[in-house]
View 1: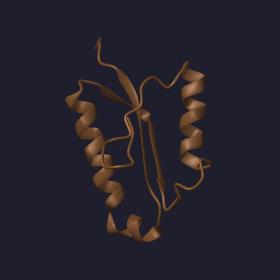
View 2: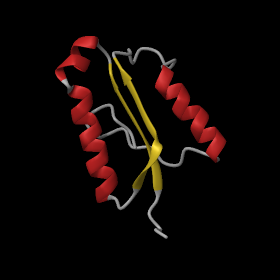
View 3: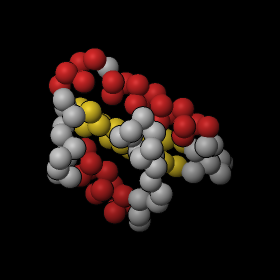
View 4: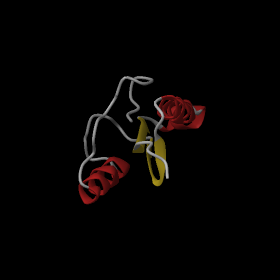
Length: 89
């Protein structure tokens, strides 16, 4: 059994145009790279992606799911929002 930390992934782009340009894909790739470099593992069903959702509000569908999942699992742990400007691990 692995001792690696199990983490969730959240990424967001604010416009449909950004979503179509694939900037969400680059955020996800950066997150996965960082998670692996830190020796952690992504929980299979804990990837939350808000594509085309404004950051002007905290009411975002996938962010709400992440919060709910973290509450059910006993906490969200640490957050790092420095990767690619808006992605957090």
